Image (tube, rainbow, N blue to C red; front, side, top):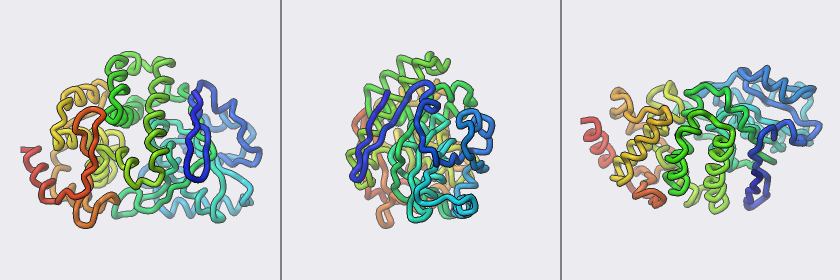
Length: 338
């Protein structure tokens, strides 16, 4: 499958196909920046190219890592005409995308996501950035890649927990778009077994949902905020856990919480689907405390002293509420864990 994402400043291809990475014509001057854990795979995938390896994890998603990468680029003589290829998961993509946006005031980059989470979420739409001690993604910008190239074959050996993390974002897209949710319910077994045809459909269907929303609202002024479904609670849980809970699992907790808050009629089906995909649905009690609310108050989507929530009224019908008072959420959390 080949899609074209059209933004206000450019358009670029999103390719979902077997062996697509090896077939893609990257510029001769492109430098590959890869997750250090994928060193062998990177060398097999990009033979003969210069490869920079970065240690990756949420703790590395800092401005200091961007500075380190920029210094390496300077040392090897990367100029404005060169480009970067991000080869890794979501954190690696965020770091490389943000680095490309600021290095020499901006150079081109390509995104080759290697996790399901990155394929269906972070690689699409141009969001780049790093964390601060205060919270996730508080420093960043919208900076679109030249292309996103995905090979479902890469997912065949992805660890089960990593695969489940990506499925949380796919389920979120299903809540936004009911036909995808129904398709997921009918294809649980094939997805669990990672059948190649099912993986390709899974990625393509999820990407179509995100592309449609990003094209309506590239800079997250309104419609793109729908993609934050489950994320206000989810990001807060990540922060309170000191990022010991991975993003996808945190989103699953966030979906469980927000569907309860919104009294979503299909909540039981949602929770069952999350569990079928290997995700937990009950947040650990030690994270359901005042610190969770405090973490929500530094979320970049807040509105003044109030909190913005994306509410699933039913499958495919989502409402953005930007004036939720903290005391209402505090009462909800207290009752939820009672």
